[in-house]
Image (tube, rainbow, N blue to C red; front, side, top):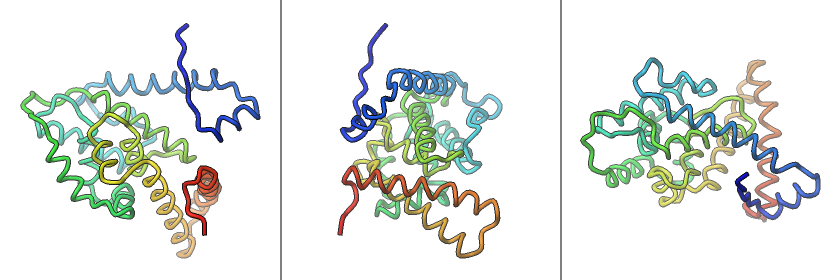
Length: 236
């Protein structure tokens, strides 16, 4: 059986060793699920029925962004829907949390669009029929980011994190080149979610919102502790 090495941060490796987690079994199960999701995305034919039918946990706004990406790829004559199409669509939609997260770390969405346009290659295909390898991987990372944050939905903020984390696509290269790396974006998303929760509490949240608030607060606190342990936050 082929062997795959898994590299962990020192603090995480120590914790895994201390509590005796079966890393091999966990990684195998996680990889099996990821392979299934990515394979489903890659084999789907764009234009058949609802292209977002397999993205059940995506919010309506996130699904709309995926549809806009498909339309954008067709309009530019690309052979595949790429990460640049997903990023362009997310920014063009304009009202989502991903766009707000970029602005909060002083990355102007308009400048991102200009850089994407500058990097645009030659087109002239007959229209996108597939999702590219990098875009499929970015969508899988999007789901993983949502799960990591403890969310039962996938929104545009998770899509931004997925695009940043994907190492080979144009979107990630552009974002990281402009200062939007995974750490900065994750901190921005956490801060925006915390601000939203505080605002809804102050305005008098509904029972459903209150339940969501209660569920998210431990997640945000856990992220703060992890960032402090990793030395990612400033200490006064």
